[in-house]
Length: 253
Image (cartoon, rainbow, N blue to C red):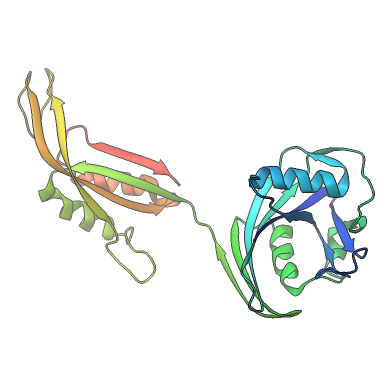
């Protein structure tokens, strides 16, 4: 199951929903943000906007996707909750048929009757944490485990190069552990390709002749580095690349 949850914010307060009105409600008595289940054929964004409008009367403007929370509850199928915050909304607040809506100071929210797992991701929201993945394991109402991971920003490289230079590039990058992923080193892949080019006047080609078309077998080295090391990786590749004008693609993840 996929759901959305959004915390509307103004004046350092979150709009909280005290779930009190439904007789059969797993969240009865708890304080939550606003949101609900994804309907058939509905996009995540449309679900988010619809649920906010239905439960609060507010029309959502801009919003920020803050994290993905995975709930494992007893033996049920996992529930994936897309977590958002927004300070951009308009309209008139209405009464909610699922409970009482109330603006609560952020520094008082932790005193409310919350799910224990909610306390974890609310703290992350208060701290303006980077995007996160949070897995929460519940046995009935009791939180029995959690796992928090942060999404890191990477830059992906494609380097077109003669096969005999692949090793030199890899060794140069690994001097600074740029190709290490967790407990694995030299993490990269190669793809066979064929390069085509025409050498122009004034060039000093590694391969080919001025004024002529050239074709040669090449390798494409594919790897990723953390975004903060993108410029270093680019320099290290160029440092050992034999081409006068290296063909290097960089994509941001």
